[in-house]
Image 1 (cartoon, rainbow, N blue to C red):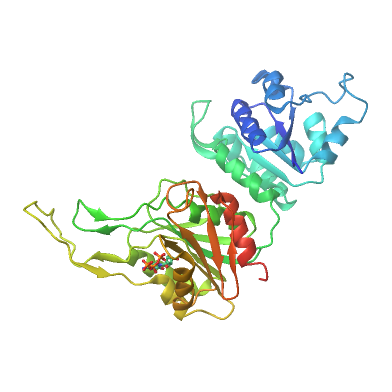
Image 2 (image 1 turned 30 degrees about the horizontal axis):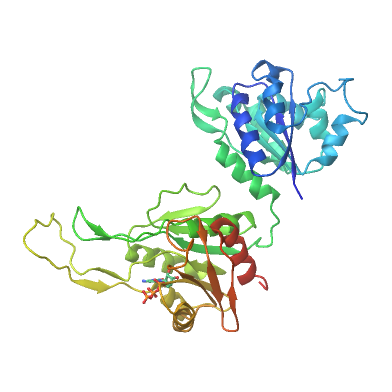
Amino acid sequence: MKKTIVIGVTGGIAAFKVAQLVSNLKKKGYEIHVIMTESATKFVHPITFETLSNNRVSIDTFDRNFQYDVEHISLAKKADLFVVAPATANVIGKIANGIADDMLTTTIMACTCPKIICPAMNTNMLNNPITQDNINKLKGYGYHFVDSGDGFLACGDVGSGRLANLDIIEDEIEIVLSKKPLLNKKILISAGPTIEAIDPVRYITNHSSGKMGYSLAIAARNLGADVTLVSGKTSLKKPHKVNVIDIVSADDMFKEITSISEKFDVIIMSAAVADYRPKNVSDSKIKKSLDMSIELERTKDILEHIGKNKKENQVLIGFAMETEDLIENAKVKLEKKNADYIIANNLNEKGAGFKVDTNKVTIISKNENKEIDLMDKSDLAYLILDYCLKEE
Ligand code: CTP
């Protein structure tokens, strides 16, 4: 069923950015109701939010032109989540002190659902101990906050107080609305390609985009896990509330992962780790001559190393990328690397593997080969976590 989000917009210049937020959330399939304060309507016309949300915007508690139910109570009952963005110092102060004198503050007061506050204001107003006390008081009552970012403010100052980026607000919404079956689980995920230097200019790498590993990290975070992502170089943005450790080479990844792997309940190796690296890395650029060859040596197999040293109750999930004999090869990897699951994908299958947003996999375990239909990597991430960690 569609979840309902009530968005409270207050009177700050960042109100215009919230129009985009409403549009993004609507596209994700949420039912959106917007409540504006009188001062918010001085920055953005309610018609903007009405058009984007397909719902009437509420402003006035005593508006007589509405269907007969007590509007702030009916909205409060409908809401799965209440987001205040931008939240001025004024509205934070009112909510923290139980003042309900307009549609927004009366509705939030009547809401029992989770609430997210996204402050946006002048730096000095934000740093004012009164505002900070109010924020801390609301945090104590269980309100979630998306901290404002640093930058150029409309008042001409430079500092903290800018409304957080919309993608961070959207991430926080996903986190707050998700069920938390993985709460208290520590999950380590590797993602992306590794890079093996030949000389200061050239290197050997592969086509991994990191999308599968990042999707797993985001899904695990939303489901309540404490997630560490060891990532090779990708163009993806660092996920909010995930501890990201950047690495370059297979050896860097080996060192980072093996130094912390003991602390994790679940380890997922979705990185495309190089199997070979140049035996000698030249300090200076290799000048061209006739034919040349590069001598390669094996890198360490991280999954195999962790498999050999696996802690009791630790769940180890690897990937297998194959172009032939998918199941047979993946089964050999399951055994050899002492993994609990191997997520096998065939590079020759349409929509599977590197760079694309979808994947088609078979989840291999000792007792079962579970074929999964082609699907978006972000949906597949939830399915993998659910399937592999269901008895956890
Ligand atoms: N892997 C690893 N360390 C390596 C190579 C691979 O931890 N040096 C992990 C991958 O992250 C993946 C699994 O091992 O989870 C299988 O990787 P894959 O490249 O499919 O297989 P390889 O073990 O490298 O074997 P082959 O290249 O012969 O298929």
